[in-house]
Length: 245
Image (cartoon, rainbow, N blue to C red; front, top):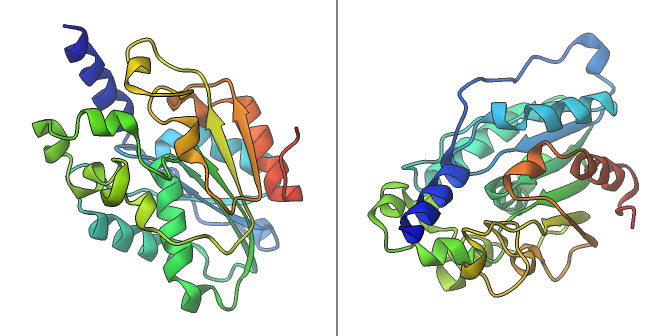
């Protein structure tokens, strides 16, 4: 019974989704503002990032919040869709920063790795990866043989650890970036991890060798999108290139 409850939690947290598009055309007053490309996680939509987008806008940035399908999609389809959206976002922008939650961080890594031609006339600012399974998720490993994970498509399968992990198959970022990891675990999933985790992703999995700064916050995976301290640290890194420790 507990295993079934845990699996339902995994599916709910990784795939619960909204369907409201919060992207808006930039007004004339936004022309001189730095742009932030904001990427959501698996099974979510741009609506899921509304609170973080609002806080970024209040800090003086333009925000382009991506809205892309993930469930049932292949890795290639997701990256093709998000590349097209990001290319459209950054047109006429002089400086661009990137922020991604969970899978959104992998989307950003993939884009920055492959879009040098698009970015050659744009100044690249700082990037923040929030709760991103850069080395995969042990929880995804636990359910990797489930038919529901198979139904989730290639992008869902790519969240495992090891050689088949999307994160492990991406190159190193060459931009300045920081990583935020959550430490508030769930009693339903904690036994699936070997160390500190946010309920879906371990702290260790979020780390990358060439990250410029790293910080942990006592927040769960899904709460990161709404957490005030996560937003504060994200803005601090975007502005200064380091977190406030």
